[in-house]
Image (tube, rainbow, N blue to C red; front, top):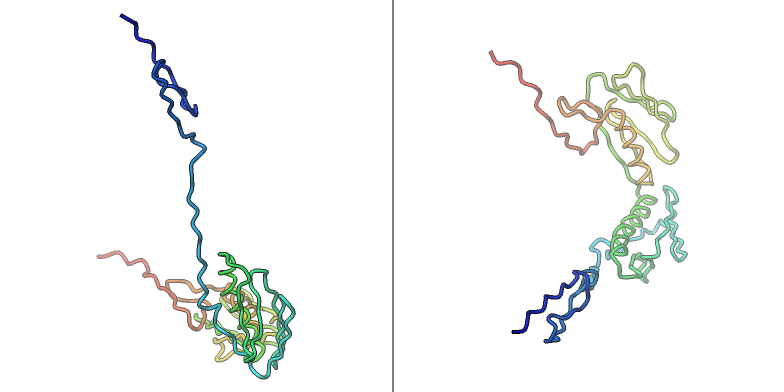
Length: 226
């Protein structure tokens, strides 16, 4: 009676091996490093904001040079540089249209963003923007002194802020501040700097808030029940 041959040990990282000494059956093992992935083509949809045309008023003069645009109007002059993923063209109707130059995810993101930025500079130099703030608190008041905005916000000294070039600040009833100008980003930045001195607190609502801001209030600690 023939003795049984010992089984052959196969290492775990071997590509192929034989099972048995006489059968000669060859089997293959898939190495761990060869894992297949299925690539799928991602379809970039057209941005709903980016595909809208931009109206250009008659009192605005445009200068287009490849990836650069400059708008000049009655309120001022603004310019914008475009990345390589998008471009701006002027149609025969006089409207501006921002379009993508490549079909990528980043191009889809830049499409809507730069359409909005382009519209902001057109509206800014022709009509302008404004941002309104409200002072809430006993003794809180503001005033314009020359080119400075002076605010009493409960500190030991008044807060004095220089108004940036190109912006206008108006104070009504000592508590309502209006920041206006033609550069929307500059207006938002200066308004945020004003609010930063006294953000509205959630218990009594004291502080500086935007006119359309809703401050979520918290309930204070309840007194001890008798």
